[in-house]
View 1 (spheres, rainbow over the protein chains, first blue to last red):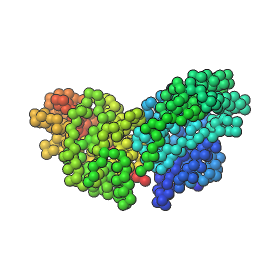
View 2 (cartoon, one colour; view 1 turned 180 degrees about the vertical axis):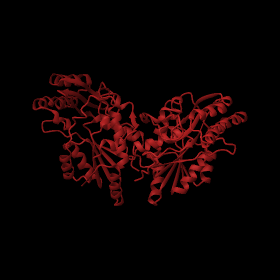
View 3 (tube, each protein chain N blue to C red; view 1 turned 45 degrees about the horizontal axis):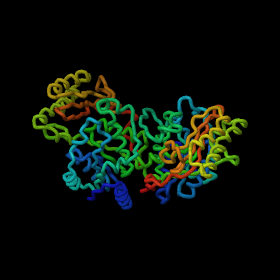
View 4 (cartoon, chains in turn orange, yellow; view 1 turned 135 degrees about the horizontal axis):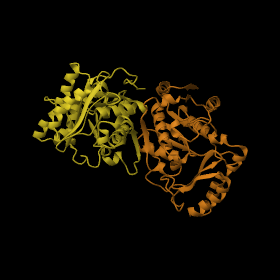
Length: 293
Length: 293
């Protein structure tokens, strides 16, 4: 496994892999890797011939009062984890490599970024779509892997790929949870033992909503009520607790045509998100068509 | 030569050309082709193995009060001209193919679009960068060709390619002029004979500025004065007459470190632009580095 910092080194390595007839998989990450990330890398390892993992704490997706500075960095441990799951190349650039002086071009999306985390993290999705576009152009993967944990991010990226005709297949892999249900997140490292205990309310509430929906409850008002009763007493602040359509991300009143329960809450100084698909989207034109050339 | 309307047909044709070891050149146009476009296609023919010309009057780069509806369409003549210069494939999509329902992702740039045409055509460069990104992703060319006539557009696209790490070489080809100096433009078709005569003031003013600069005049105030004296009496409205740095597009007071004279004026209902490099940019880091993988 190689670790490189420069765009041209990535291009060279990918070119060599392509010359050997290999397909290329990309797993974009911000490092501080956990089993969620590793599940993406394992999928890439299984499905593509050359696996690139990027490790880059992307400054443009953090707001001015967010946790960019204290976001966990763990390069040595990350490298060992990548090696363990068979990553071929780690791309770990410095911010200057990605955003040189005079950088002035962004990819922006309306619609999908407007709800859920959008209003609470202005500029966040612009940072995500921009850095992912750059990584796509640098690596030129056949397949790129994202986690369902960041449900809205995955939806935004799928839409971006479709809208801009990017010749890349987007795969979204299931949330990986701890044994007690807590969704894996690099930010879980911020939690004290007591906070971590309180953080279990997220998965408990989602599981309860799913149980009620599976038992026949169609009204999202009833499901939201159950979720709020579990979450609100345990957290310090709620950014949102919502049930939205799996593709449009618009709030729905009934789960019948598809629904995802999603939430963002604060426990102490830590913002946590989690989600669960309550019912899949009814078939629409907007299927995840394979756009590979 | 083939003419196709659908993205997937382009991808298929390009894939076949690549399988034959050919490089791919792209000439994005809005049709109503003239010698300026043909010079780009001839360059592509000479420099690449498979030449794609796109013909698409892009609605998103026209403002609500601009000439989208009356912009000249001349598909049959265009196809003959493309065939004559050896284009391999014309991509002539319908607007729905490029902007399907729910389209919501744009490429935006600050800085370079802020001056010159930017304030007079709000949203124009967002439309340009977005459609060019899409064409780049659909065709995946090695080299893309643009005309210097749209100087700001070429600068914006160069910056976009650099900022977003697009694996494409951008070539900007010289302005092609009629024998009497008028820069070739699809919009020249709008001009009555009397308007066409008045339109000669653009190239006359630019040539005069260049002559003065070559004779040693360094002050852009003096050059602008000379240009204004030629242009203002002949046109109905001036959007701008400016002298800017060739790369930053910021107004300069002195031509010594590089200067381009550029203008946009109205003659009747027709908006015309033209420009001329008075002195090349002094070497900067920002050279047109070849970014091909």
